[in-house]
Length: 371
Image (cartoon, rainbow, N blue to C red; front, side, top):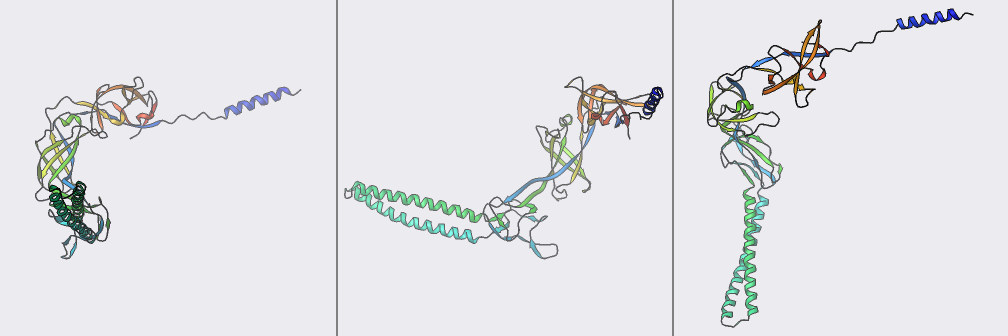
């Protein structure tokens, strides 16, 4: 029988098949970026950027609706008359826009006619009541007749009061058909045109008073204690040469829930209107004596500790055998300084932590450090 050659052939086939298999592919290394632990000097002076905003800005809304009949005319740079627009200055009580008056004038005239009619009825009722009172006092009129005259007088009196209230209401609506500037201000925005149909609460203009401006900026909790209400601060802008002096007029009592900073407001005189809304200003807050440098790491380097649900950790890069490995180290955190955070325990300056990709690797895993 030829069983042995067949078995030998099968064995060779198995050997060659096994020899032809490829080795399983190795898991690719996770790319990470590292950053050395730095130090932060707490104290000294910190520089901040502030946003210039008007001291007062209001949106003027119509109280009486209707079609816009006219808009304030001013002389433009080319010498021609035009509608008031953004950048124009207006004086207090200037009529900026006028709703069509005819409808309201008709209502006023109608209310006046109703008041005159009610007044005539009241005058007659008063005479009747006076006559009834005289007759009743001499017992020349019965009590029901007297009561009827008094009731007619009371009704006529109430009608006159109602007509006066109606007239006052339509007169107010007529007066409110003109939109007036409540202060000397600059026009920030005009939202209406002649012929536009507006209703009550429609915003027609936005005005800003910039004789004073405010520089608003945010400071972290570690620095807010160095700011005092009433103290003078110096600000500079790239657009306006020189320095401007202002006074701290407001400090937010609580931090913004998203940015975790406290809002500070500096009020600055602006008589020549050099500081414009939206400009960026710079200032330096002076602090006290320098304290010991604090080790800091990027906020992106901090992860939850695997051994303590309430704790934090960072992943350091350790070189071994020509390869890089991630090593977890538990840390205790301090104050935040922008996008960095202080570490009170766990790392030392100069050690390398994973700043990008920390959440993608685990303790002991090999990593690929990229620039």
